[in-house]
Image (cartoon, rainbow, N blue to C red; front, top):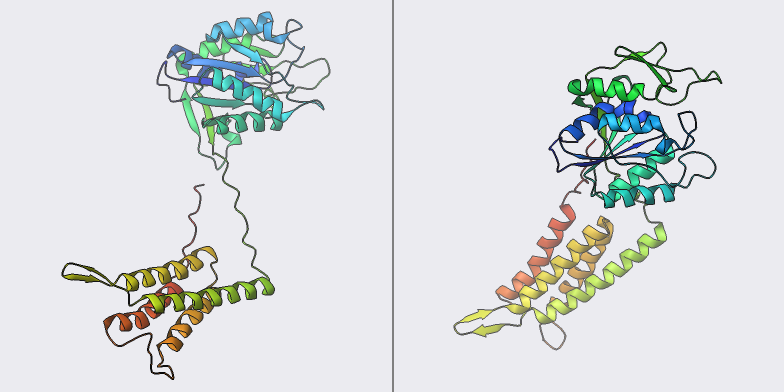
Length: 342
């Protein structure tokens, strides 16, 4: 749809023959004039046009020849009716997209099943999807206008090829009233007719957003269990860190407090991980209480006079460092998720 020439390969999906000429005929003709590949898919067989098989009828061949299209096909599953199979339609569209190495898909259908199937196949293949829209039917949406002023005559000739569906007088196209007295398809609502202008308008359909799972707050029982486990784990980290924080490695003249570094890194990973994964400050607070309470108890002098946290820089950092880390983790504001673009 960027009109870059032969590098483009665009698949158009319409309900029935004739819709492609009226809705997107100018864009198809312009793409072909620019050397782009075009394939037209029809989602339903109808017998209102010339010939029993509309895919090979004289009017379809005449319209496609006028637009410069040599590849048009009927989808293997009907787009409407009780026998419609959305998965079969999506699979067929996906096969065509892969076969022609499509770079874009254009929808000219209002049929929900066909539209959903084609869109699913295109997005699964990572291909942009554009939908044909009249200006009046796209209020509030960003329109993409394709200049087809040089292709208007070819478009009108293609529309006129479907004499059983449209009547063309100059640049005015009107639906032909069927015997049943009702008009279906994109011509419905045209009334006395509509003037074919020099632009065709489309909207780009956004890819499906990942379904957001609603956060369900845990029940009191689950929260209490999580808090208890966090308290126990925090106490365990306090024991291990207190035992290991005095360990050092001597490399020549340099003494590296490897035990203190690993202990503080473990505390940071524990508290920050709980805050990121659980997201509950109470759980992090209980882990902090278990951690700091254990460090405090183990820093006291025992009855035998032994001390696990002796005075000195490592001992001071081990008693102060976890407190500062816990304060930062608990006080850190919640980061809101990024909103998807409209």
